[in-house]
Image (cartoon, rainbow over all chains, first blue to last red; front, top):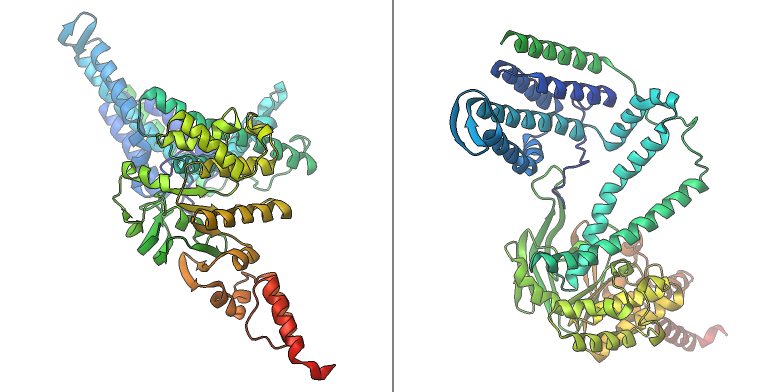
Length: 266
Length: 289
């Protein structure tokens, strides 16, 4: 349970930590788009250097990033295999029915693996250096223009921050129930798949029960404190762009420009 | 069954920046058939300590010996199943572990997991529900239809039905009314005497400690700071008040009397002890009247 990386924020005061969450979110998205545009070795080398620079300026131990990539290795390998056998174009080395290994297929497979790793690394920087509340605040702020077309921005942001806020609570709750049922002899790591699924019921039902109770208590608590929707609510954490955001943006723009230049040259 | 801790350290979330040493050099022997209370502030390591007794947590360093079965950092999950059969834990707010469609089915969960036949499990469930004094009319109902106090009883029956030799109680009376609290504590005391259960009670109720326990462990910052009979531990009233752990009501009353010049031979811990002492004091001071 302690291995779950999602929503895990590592507090710090590094350059990246002090950036505005909106800037971090947008720059991460730009980086991801840029990585997809990259189509040559030199562009990937540049992308990789950018990712390493960002990681270094976040001041977070490399082990965390490895933990972020590790659970997705299976997915990456699967995509690579599919790409290798189904990719077409270039010199054909081997083929059998619809399966074939071609030079373009191999090249694309390597590119896709690199893209995957780079995107995971940079989005891990975002989630590790930004608290969940900051992220939902950023999303709220960025979606504000949609208010004009009656999109429920406040409600969406509230749902998001409540959901994120209760992830650790639900993890604790799960662990508690797991321990109670283990003490009553439930063994969740042995038996057939059906037997294991059956045992999961003894975790899921209490978990749902407590989640519903919690939701009801939270609603009561919010109403008794006069919550009437987000209209006109002021904020405790006011988002402000600072010098760091300007530096970050310039760095990212320069990097993207470099990737684009390399893309068009090769 | 006896329990021994030998220089146990436990590190929470080892090898991460969230690493946190939550037990420090615990040495402890709990004799077979004893009733031990564990007191200490929230976060002092009480819950971490009790989870070592049935292997939910394994020591980072050192070992735990439960009646000859050793638990250390390398113990495999498989080896722990037989241990858990003998060590029952009633967690805080245990009603949150209920899940089955009927009360009886929920109580049967434990025995069935330990490989008991269905009829035997049903018998044990009924037996346990009788022990916790849940009226028979509720047995076929859904546990979610019951009141909070009744759900607590079902959850405790669910632990008792596994026939543990060691019963660990983590604040079992939290959130109950005074009547329910008293009945619950009397039930555990009865089990302790009738079935020679070894009991470990984590509590903030000093009266329960004074009334039932024959041994007290005081924890602070992941360490055992005091370990002895209630009379010895409560003798150090200044230390307990300084650490805001509190005293049994009777002892508090006696201290107030002592401040006004009444002399006691020894600190009374429960009401009958206090009454006894006051009667003696009165007898010894006829000159004042």
